[in-house]
Structures are given as C-alpha cells and as structure tokens.
Image (tube, helix red, strand yellow):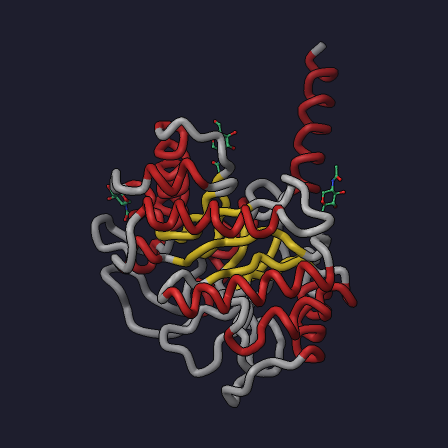
Length: 294
Ligand SMILES: *[C@@H]1O[C@H](CO)[C@@H](O)[C@H](O)[C@H]1NC(C)=O
Ligand SMILES: *[C@@H]1O[C@H](CO)[C@@H](O)[C@H](O)[C@H]1NC(C)=O
Ligand SMILES: *[C@@H]1O[C@H](CO)[C@@H](O)[C@H](O)[C@H]1NC(C)=O
C-alpha cells in the first residue's frame, strides 16, 4: 500500500510540476537602453530554453511601455514561450494604455502565450493605491479579457506585491479578487531578522508561508506564486547580507532549486545591466555568471 500511495503522490507531484511556471523576470530594454525588438525577445526565449533546467516563461512589467507586448508576444508565439504580463495601474491614462495593449495582443494572438496577468506590481508596498482600488482593477482586467474570443477561466488574473504588503493586514480586498497571489521576497533586503546567506533560505520560505497563511485566512484558495526573489552578485552589504557570486550561487542552489517545479516561480532576474545591486544570472554576453544546474 505504501508504494502504491507513493506512486499516486509522485503522479500528483509530476502533474503539478508540469503545470507550474518556471521563469525569470526580464526587462524590456537592451544594455544600451533601447527597447527590445521582436528578435531580441525571441533570443531571450531561446536563451531561457537553453539554460540548464529549460525555462519557458518570463515576467514582463508592462504591456504598452516599450511596446512590450507588441514585440514580445509574437516572439513568444514563435518560440512556444509564455509571458506573465504586467499591467501598470497608475495613473488612469497609463492604466488604460496598458489595458489596450493587452487587449490588442489577445485579440491578435489569442491566449496560448499567456502565463497569467498581474495587475500592478508592488503598488501596496509603495503606498500608491489601496487594496480595494486594486481589487477593482483586477476585476476590470479580467472582465475585459472575458469579452475576447478564446478566453476561458484558466487565464489567471492576479497581483504581485512584496510579502510584507501581503501580510500586513491591509490586503484582504485584493487577495479576494486575485486568481493567483504573486509574492516578492528578498532576504537580502530584510532588516528585521539576521539575514546572512546562512539564514536566507529559511527567511525566504518563512515569508512564502506567511503569505500563504494570510491568503487562507482571507478565505481564498488562490495559489501563491513566487514572482520575485534572488540574491545579488554585487552591490552593498545590507544588514548581514553580502552580495557575491558564491552567495548568489548558494541562494540559487538552496532556494531556486527547491522552488522551480514545485511552486510557480519567476526568478529575479534574467539579466541586469549596470544595476547596483545586480541580481541578473546572466552576464552581459548572455552567459550564466554561476552554475544554474540543480
Ligand atoms: C482555455 O484556454 C487555454 C489558453 O488558450 C487553452 O490552452 C485551453 O485549452 C482552454 N481550455 C478549454 C477547456 O477550452
Ligand atoms: C536566522 O533568523 C532567525 C529569525 O528568523 C534568527 O533568530 C536567527 O538568529 C538567524 N540565524 C542566523 C544564523 O542568522
Ligand atoms: C499553500 O498552502 C496550500 C495548502 O496547505 C499548499 O497546498 C500549497 O503548497 C502552499 N503553497 C506554498 C507556495 O507554500
């Protein structure tokens, strides 16, 4: 009986693993600041596929800025890649332009390229809006998508925010509106606990657990996705957190390798140019800075 239930559990796990997103946060600009063209996005999707572990998905932060969806969606369609779309929610003109860019993309290319849609990114953390205003916008975007041919409710619309913004007791309204909860957590930036690399994995998983508990307390069954985490290879020391290639490698081995395939995860980040601190896993030539094998 025991081996039978293990087999069932394994099947369930593998099914879950197939369904879980494995991706990276990705920026819309090249090292010279120019917006990526369709061919640049295709290169990114092909690069993702070729990395050890084979990734198919990326998160982008905007729909209209840099013509992101107009250029990235045909690249996704051409390569079989998937996109977690970001929609900026402030101000109302920008929000409407963002919605229009998403609408045009799904009208033209359908929904097969959509990993999900995040309405907003860290807006609650920044204090730019309220949970109830965000909830209305999540419902607004879902309503817009539902009018498009080919839509069904497998298209998840949610929101991304920091784990502290999710768990501070002010986020219930938006939790209830979301089909998924994207949590951003960086032990590197944490000041309340000893945040050395020795403790980083613990701190990170505690933060995910805290978000999950908050979501359940709000009466939601929405899955919690990891939408940003990572460790910098360079930059300033924060509290006890020291950026370095060996520490970033260790955080990858301890956190990325236990997250990918089990929890829907978008690592931060694929590539950084002149960023300080720098979280990118690829150098400026597109080569891994450390070993990404799990
Ligand atoms: C729902 O839409 C997705 C994305 O286009 C598609 O892959 C899936 O087959 C659809 N499911 C149903 C039941 O039609
Ligand atoms: C790890 O964090 C916990 C709090 O979560 C703290 O009590 C402990 O001292 C830290 N350990 C190290 C090695 O930094
Ligand atoms: C959240 O909790 C549910 C229910 O216990 C569990 O199935 C799921 O794996 C948890 N998600 C994460 C990301 O920990």
